[in-house]
Image 1: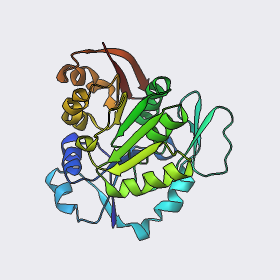
Image 2: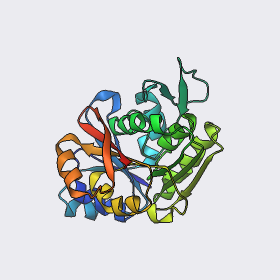
Image 3: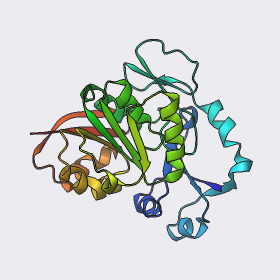
Image 4: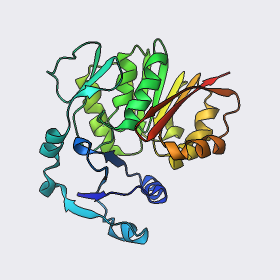
Length: 259
């Protein structure tokens, strides 16, 4: 397996990766330059070149990714009340804790889009059923669980991500989370709340199926601030109103409530 890194977002390219069932991990180690990371058993050289994207590639055995992530990632606050950390021992200063094992999956708590989604999600979880679409590490599913959700469904098209998701769910003792590999079409349960922290091009693709499931709340994150108005005008939110918007750095998240 190889680790591919690039430094400039390209939504068409990332949509192509999504179609290949690959997950893009986005992070800014030590709050420095944002880096986009893809792990794949398939040689991605040609697809990078076809989109004119500069990249680096290395075998993961040579990158030392596991120790590197431990060095760069520091615990912190996902929301005002939810603390995130990367082991089983670190105590939460106060409030609730979400524990994530850094791995080859999106969602460590450090990224602005995850924080925006968590802040919009935590106040509407109590006693609800929640579906986390494209769950990655399952950090939002676990957040929903620790914030009082009655039942949580977590799924991702990336089977590699789901291995880490199951690991994190077990670490947090969240017995009310059901997790599997699949897309939005695989959700056969009613969810009061549907959350998706994915790039806008993919949010647009799944929006019709999300709306069709008629959740009480929809939480979307992964929207660049300059894309927000266009994104909202491109999706049909008939029957819903914008209840809350959360801005973190250059990113926005939005919570819709059914009328």
